[in-house]
Length: 518
Picture 1 (cartoon, rainbow, N blue to C red):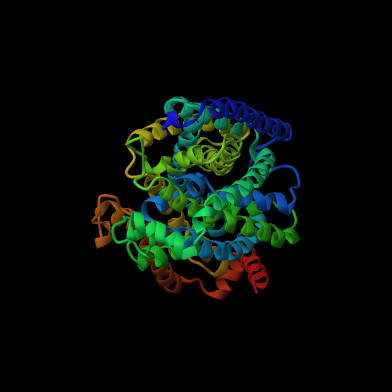
Picture 2: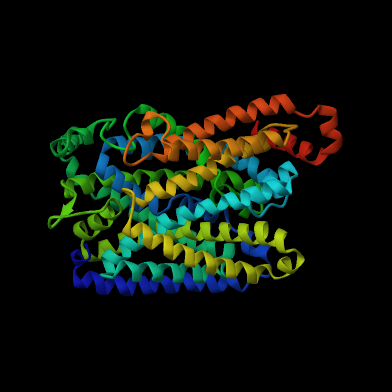
């Protein structure tokens, strides 16, 4: 794979990567100078424009998965992957984003939440529930691993680097600057990354225009000539897109719930003014819709590498997009695309490092250690990031050496389990009144239990395969948690009089949220 990159691409690549790093460090230093507390690190101490935060939202929602990993699945399995990843999931996710953001922001601002776990604890008045979600957030490290694998594949291909060296370099650099910058720098770096990603998305989507010289049918004929299943809406021989239940139904459920990730739903808390929310959502959704379409480039890659090999050597699923970029684009165009791919990874990686480190610091360490930890929270947060970096290097290298088809499967299993557990408490917390604590707690526990039981227990015929689809497990977990949550909500709901007396603040707050939603 590394030998694909010509020497001029390698030299120019090093120059551009170093320049890119310098620009990021400029914004990090600028942002770090304004941080005085862990709250500043979490939510920022400056007023951001809704356009900047909207672009930051699109950048952090779109990760290395969308630009690097998922196109590999599409190259492997064809049109069925496009329907699943570029149509079904995005449509549900973007509608869900609009509905959930407004309610979450209204309540998140009022309860002064810095993290998803704090939001849960504040809404349901339970420190134990905060701690539960803080520990559950550790599952998000699987997503960090996915991004690091994607970035490693791209940089190792372009810079002719050993993958271990590339992996260590990426982790040390990104985790290093995230120790200091926080939200103040992240919004600006995300905005730059989003602009680069928009340019690269257009380039990647346009890179296969010549394949359409005979129209859409001509394009599909090229795929059919390689493998008839590539041009079909379902692919029974795949592990992820076998039928409409897997491609559409499960992806819609996941799309609705996927917004319940801290680096996505808490982004709206960066806005200081309520009237900015609509513009923020408009910019974020329009940009994100474009990003989701990038997986179509996986079809172009399959036409370029019909048997998915280079010089007789099989291309790993996670390396297909890197190979396509190096093979198809002239040096300077290729470098621009590489910058966009790196941006896609860094934008989400920054958000995950920030949200996960704050959760560990504020919601796990501080409650356990006490006031001494609270007084030194900024220092402790930096030590947490160092620990996360070490774990990330170890797990990333393991996934580079021993992937189960793709690191995407590993990441989905962890991330899907997390947001499946978060979905019901977020939904009930915003839209239902007099919610008994047992309902969201039981729903979360049910979701985690069902997800891992289905996945590791091999339940349902869909799991009877060498590679199991975490999307099936997550969809069934979400359905089960909604059912359990609703049953317990109606069984144990507090009387209206009692609720008004004991919890007037949350009651009044929810009335405001309802009015805004209506």
